[in-house]
Amino acid sequence: MNSTQKVAKDSQQMAEMTAAAMFASDAASRGLDMQILSVAEGRATLSMCVGPFMLNGHQTCHGGYLFTLADSAFAFACNSRNKVTVAAGCSIDFLAPGREGDVITATATEQSLTGRTGIYDARLTNQNGQVIALFRGKSHQLNGEVVPGLILQQAATE
Image: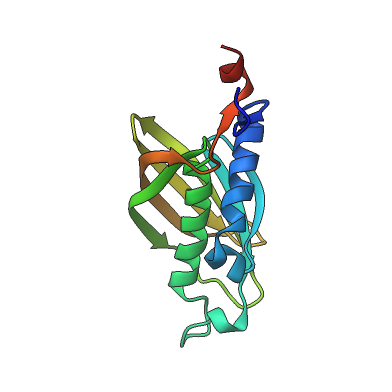
């Protein structure tokens, strides 16, 4: 191991360290007061409270904000292995409205990862467990690391 490397003891710590680094530079997620509730390899759960500035002309949460929450959960899930990964395509289906004051939770879960391409589904629910939207994202891994030099401990000892 060289002096620029950081070591994660397991995949959980790798996901947590990667998420912390991403969140620190993610002005969009922080600006919407999103909270990271949990991260793990291929999975992330974020929440956001619907504020008055997020309401559309029908006084429900604008779909763009719901998409942003789902997209952020997707980003943390697909970057959890410390490989720079971006969205190649996304879609969302809105099932019920979000209302002012609702706490919306998005849980993104890896469905498939083959080579540099992944498929992730995110489920958005309100504080009552009602499903608000379903999101699907396709990821593409680029070259590079989210946290430069971060490696898994078992890889460091090989």
